[in-house]
Image 1 (cartoon, helix red, strand yellow):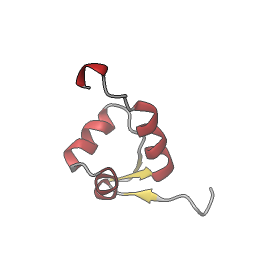
Image 2 (image 1 turned 30 degrees about the vertical axis):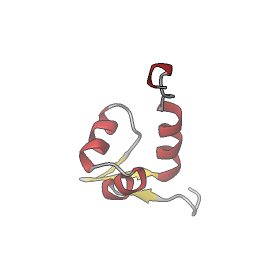
Image 3 (image 1 turned 90 degrees about the horizontal axis):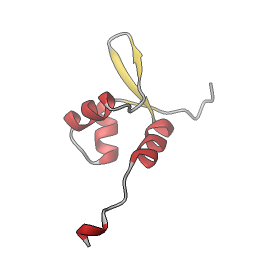
Image 4 (image 1 turned 30 degrees about the horizontal axis):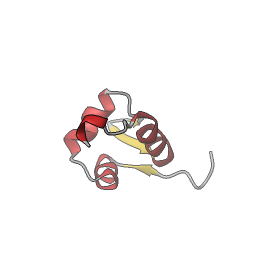
Amino acid sequence: MASDVKFLTIDDVAEMLQVTRTTIYNLKKKGLPFIKLGKNIRFNQDEVINWVLTNSREPSKENK
């Protein structure tokens, strides 16, 4: 494992994405990759960024 891997808590991811903790739990149910260490949930920062970019949608043309 590379030493530059950064694991984030739910609060860290919520702050990074500027959303609530509840939103992170909902995104986790929708496939946001996470690691469970005992009772603790951690997120690989690079995987979170890639998942968000891959699963984001462009605004519809109707909203313009």
